[in-house]
Length: 100
Image (tube, rainbow, N blue to C red; front, top):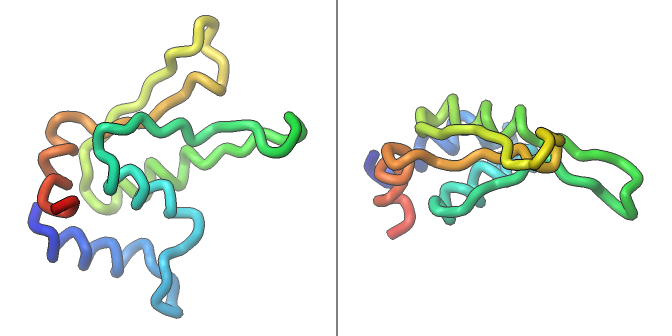
């Protein structure tokens, strides 16, 4: 996907009415800037006090941009901390021009 096309989609779908990136979609941009990274959108906040789950925002952001991704869980017993989202080979090709 061309850089201009992806940027237009980001501005159309992930920006607020004020023209700024919505805070809940910051992980999407982080993953697009580092396509080889494995994102773990579920993590403990503070001193183990509350569990933050940003997986729905991350997956929805990638879906509406049309970026191919996969999910999985690599925790030994399937716990929430093992949940991850990463771009597939097709997804990395889609954002290759965006990172240049």
